[in-house]
Image (cartoon, rainbow, N blue to C red; front, side, top):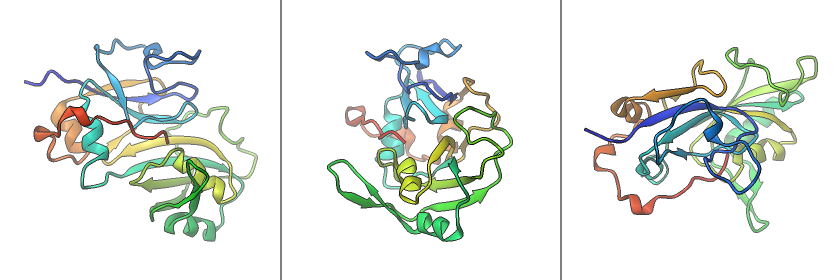
Length: 214
C-alpha cells in the first residue's frame, strides 16, 4: 500500500507555489488544509497565475510528467486585452518566437488555441479585464513549458495577458474547485487522469527536477 498522497488545489493569484520562502509572499501553507510533511508542488505556477496545481508527497511525479517520452497536455484559460484577430490565433497555433534567457528567441511548438467565452466557473478577479472593456478569452493547450511561455506568447502577439488560469493537465481538471480549495485524489485515479501508465515502475527520484514557471 502506497504511503504517498496526491492533491489538486485551485491556486489563488498572488500566492507562490511554495511552502517556504525567504521573501514576504503568500505561501501554500496559508491554505486552510493540513498537508502532510514532504508535500511539494508539481508544475509550478507563477505568483500572478492561478488554477490547477498538483501537490504531492511523491517526488517522482515531476519526472513522470515532464521527463517522459510522451508529452502531457496542459490547458490554460487566458484573458487578454482587446479583440484577438483570427490571424493572431493562427500565429499562436503554428508557433511564435518568444524571448528566452540569454536574449535569444525560441519559436514555440504548434499548439491548440481557440477563442472561448469567459469560463462560467471562474469568480471574477481584479486582475481580469473589466467586462465593459474590449477583451478576449483564449484557451491554449500546449505540451512544452518554457519560462513564462504563455504570457510571452500573447505578448509577442501584441496582447497583454490580464489573467492566466490553468484549467487542466490531461484529464485532471480544475472543475468547480473554488479559489484556495483542496481536493485529495486516490493514487490510481491520479495517474489515470494524467495518462501516466508507467507510474508503478517510476524512474529514480534522484533525477527530480522543477518545471519552469508558466
